[in-house]
Image (cartoon, rainbow, N blue to C red; front, side):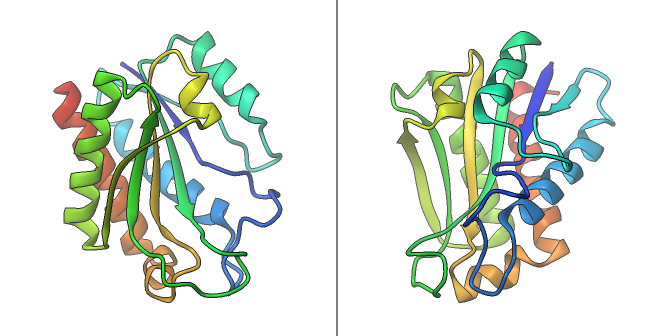
Length: 183
């Protein structure tokens, strides 16, 4: 099984930070690294990453790569934001996205990821939703996008900065992958 991990927005992406200065990429890449390390223990799984610590990989570059290696699953990891990103807002919680057409396997994986993330983190359940995001639309494999909390929430940001929370998110997503794909 080929799993592609996408650490959301790049480290230089403007505007992707919390009012207290946390860059979204700091969270996204930490969860992806933790997932890659854990998934490397499974012989039947190969893990690839679309992001880089050296430059911001374009969305097309990310999906083209995943398609070129004929990946089985694409998981884009994010931390959400609401408002202008410069002020704290009331929005909080976790949500998982699939493409607008609600592909059956993607929906099944997204529901499992959402359930496991809520169980592991105890954050607000915002549910499984649909969106026309590039990484969901242009991938030729099962693809989901996970928003693991709001960087603009005073409550969620405490968790997003925590190594324990990053590890919990990684473990919950891996648990969902294992439940869905039996490895």
